[in-house]
Image (cartoon, rainbow, N blue to C red; front, side):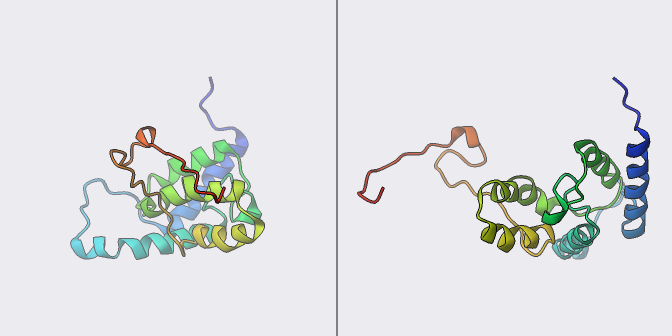
Length: 153
């Protein structure tokens, strides 16, 4: 297996790195954020998400009409590698853009896609998953469901 970038992948990597260098500081593993900086992290994350989205980098493999780049899975891997080298506040959007919004894209009406997808991609809304089943927590495999006939099937 050849792990070297193809010519096109190398070009995308250079494009991604140039964008990241323009907007972010390199990651510094030895630096600890102050409590004041941590308090501002959500606003920084929203701003970074909006910056990425406006440039088409918020979701590399998503179609452009949904706020994506229209790229390949390998381009997404390259983006993740390059973004990981910078102080990019991405945490608040991982679940929403990685799990919730893809479900909306796959199953929602066009009206709901228009209502929810763009706001999430731009960082205007943060989506999450919550599990309140007893004994479940984040253990999706442990979820239990039941159905009760109530006459409103």
